[in-house]
Structure formats: C-alpha cells, structure tokens
Length: 226
Length: 215
Image (cartoon, rainbow over all chains, first blue to last red; front, side):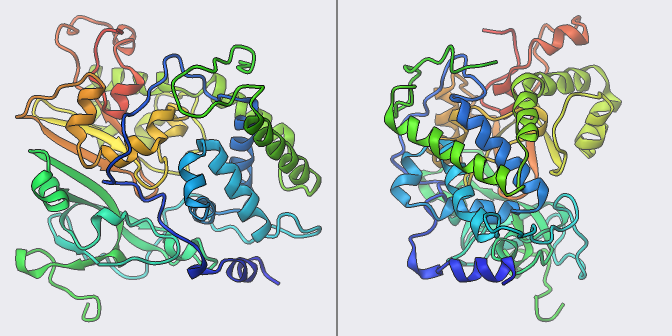
C-alpha cells in the first residue's frame, strides 16, 4: 500500500479534538517565562529529536505539513503540558510509521522538489492593495489559517508567489501549489473594542483561504469567473 | 557543549526535567528507542544527527543576524538588497547558515513603525540564520498573547513603545521566515561595523527589544 494511502487510512478526521495548537488570541495563558542564559538544548535527547526531524524531512520520509499535523493530533492536554521537543518526538512516533518508515524495505514517499516555492498554473487573483475577506473555514484536518483570522477583512500588503499548499500536502493529497499573500488586519478588525491602538497583525495566507471583498474596492474577480 | 553537565533544574518553567525526573527519563528513552529503530531501518544516520546538533549548538546563532543588521546599517546598498530579497543579500556575507529551504523576509523598524514576529500555529522562526528559537518564543503564552495584546507583551519585555508608534505583528503562518531590522541606536554614528554587531541582541531581531548597548 502506498504511504499516502496508509496515512489516509490511519487518520480518522472526526475522532479527535483539533486545533489545540491554534493559539493566537486565546486568553488565560499567563506570563511569558524567560530563561537567562538558555542553552540550545535542555537535555541530550532534545538534540537527537531535532536531528531526527531534520533528517527525516530532508530524506523525504516526512513533509513539513505531515510533521506539523502529527503534532496537532496530540492529546490536547498533553500538547499544552509538553515541552517543545516532546511535541516533535510525539509527531515522529506517529507520522513516521504512517509514512512507512518502520516497515522493512519501505522507501521514502516521493519527495517533491527542494524547498516550498512552486509555480502555480493560474495567475494570482489578488494584488497589493486588494481588500480580501478570510473565508469562514474550519477544516478538521491540517491548515495554516489561524482561527482568529477566520471571517476577517484585511488588505494584501505583499504577493509572495506560489507555494506548496499545506492543507493537501499534509494529507497525502499532493502539493497543489497556491498563491500566497501577506494580508494585514487591523487589531480593531480582529479583536473589536479590546484592540490596542495603532496595531495590526500581518498573516501569510494562501489564496483558497481568501475571497475578494468588492465593497471596499480592490480585486473584483471571483474565483469562478476569473 | 554538553549541557547535561551544567543543566540547571530551576530555570523558571513549570515542569521539572532533571536527570532524576522520571518523566524526563521516559522521554530520553523514547527518543533513544526511536533513533535506534530509525538507524536500523536506514531512515536516519547517527552521523547526520551528530552533525546537525553540533552545527546548531556551535555555529548557527543570533550573531548571524547581528552581522546582517550591522552591514545594513553601514551600507545602504546592502540594506536595499536585504529588504528586497533577504536570502540573496545574506549570502553575500558568507555566514554559517543552515538549510535555506525557506525564504527570509526582513521587516524594517523606522522612527514611526515597530515590528514584532511570532508563529501562533507552531514555532516558525528563521532558524537557518538565527539558530533555534528561545523557549519563550515557542511557548503558548507568547503565541496566544502577542497577536492580541502586543503592547502589553512588549512592556513585559521591558519595551514601552510610544502610543504614536505604529505596531506591526507578523504571524509566520506559512513558509516565510521573518527577521526584524532594528533601528540604529542614537549615538552609534561613529561606531565601526564590528562595534555595531555588539548592539544587536537576538530579542531585537524578533522585535521584543530595541538595538542598543548590551544590558
């Protein structure tokens, strides 16, 4: 069975809580603890885990999106309690066997070209200055759309080119490259009256996360009509 | 550096992981078992892991970023190239960097604009240039709070921005990695490029501090 099919069979989308990792804007997390003279690693095993992750990615056993999805599927309470490299370890333990890495004789799933930048077949729908609205979109699988941006209106400040689409690449559905945009949102738009003044958040968002917002000008093409 | 030797268990976070802590021992065992299995299956090679660990412990670190900033402060042409295409400009300096699979974007602080970087979804950071991120950058409190109350967070870091300064938060939600180009400190006009390097901390490259004399 190909690794993609194995990954699809192993993951049961609605059987697990999701999005514990999607932390932007959540309240109640308390003070940020800083550490004086912090070492690169806090224990020997942390470095070994980091090296295993980098090696597995480079060799094509994992792609970055499948690896991140492995972290996101941790038990939510464990996710919050775990140290950073424990999360990485948990994902290796889950995602590598899904990719066939524990199976004798298996070969790495075909890795794509180096890096993440890719050509996209269609021209970009939006330009710098376009007003866009983030789709109300809450997939059960992997996505790089932060929940706090869902449904919000922003302005494209940079058109970044085509990139591998994480939402499909994490699930063995191919790279399906998409245009990527840096989109600026005012704090007021994101947080309402509790927003701090003269503040914005810029988020890197893939074209399928966005719709044109004709009321405020900018791009008026629709996805279907373009 | 072998840091299990000088490891300090009381460094201010809420789970113990010293050598006598059973949870830490279990994690170390899990990592060891996984590595043994992956080596046996030919998925990873121990020498490759050794090399990656050594490079990130000894060679790649925030000093790279400080050198980039000092050059940008000293050379307007370099600064233009850096803001237009950071990876290509940084390559001019021949720094010890890691895998360059992700583009780097440099965002510039100016008298009216301050930038700060986060990854709310995981821990994206320009590690290939600046080394691995500090633990606070990867922690749920920083990731949750800095998009919602960045001025309050910066005050906790000791940075009280004037209300007139525009604050731009960059959430690294895709495969672009952001680094802040801090403002050159007043009074550094006569400093050499080498002296300028010492004014740029890791925190200034993330945007939770300004450049200035080491504190």
